[in-house]
Length: 101
Ligand SMILES: [Zn+2]
Image 1 (tube, rainbow, N blue to C red):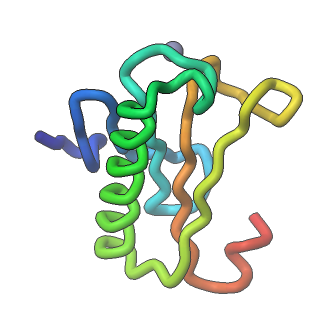
Image 2: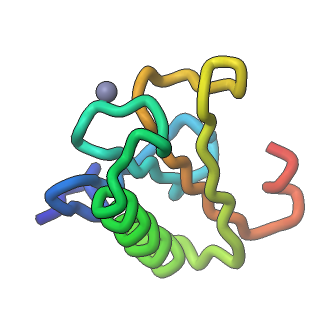
């Protein structure tokens, strides 16, 4: 079940289009349950989140011919977390210059 903004969907999480990086093809993987951090997840949720992240990466690789992928999350405001919710950022990389963004 997907729409224009949803790339991958599971009962626990979704991979959605994310424009915050400024790089075309970027996505955010978010759990449906409210958690601030990866460390609040159960083992089953963590496994599902990893599967959704992997599937999201595959969609992006295919659609945008990415040669590499930056995958990250910020745990805590002190680490730069901007959203009050766990978000895994997935940014496709094609050229060396992209890495400087
Ligand atoms: Zn939340």
